[in-house]
Image (cartoon, rainbow, N blue to C red; front, side):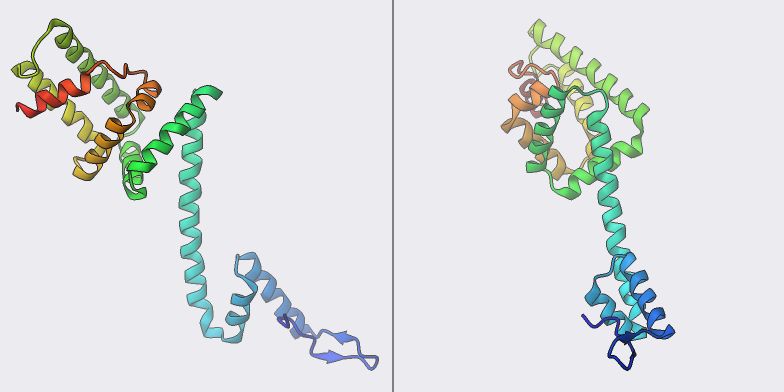
Length: 210
């Protein structure tokens, strides 16, 4: 590419690299190791004042790449945690479902919110959720109408727990509702929730009476 050119020639025509040429070669090698393409290196070395914006752009690109790698690392670590080969496939299927309904920013917000809460708090919320589900199912089994004030209060707690994860964002809540309504079978299998137990519909009816 003519990026490093010998300044001199011997009498027989062989190229002779001067100390300055070798210094230039090391500059090229150093910039290449920082991830710059040869074309960008040519541009950078042709004008010394162009180095700073090139490095700034390179740093921004590497920062974005590092965030993407960390996100991927966290997702793979979470997948491997306590999963069998069969459950890994189910989890991947469910992730694919969610990615069809939530935007990348929404998914990042959900993951960030869970990270901010911390493992202990998340587990506490899960325990509260299971307790709430148990109470609602007992009301269903007893034939308590969804219009009952006790059920309405439980539906409020249902929404409050959900808001801990969604931040009360209407767009995220709507996406979650759509994903459930259109993928009940896949989601129910993954979270071991009876697909046709009617609990979500029961909560929706109670919510409408509040």
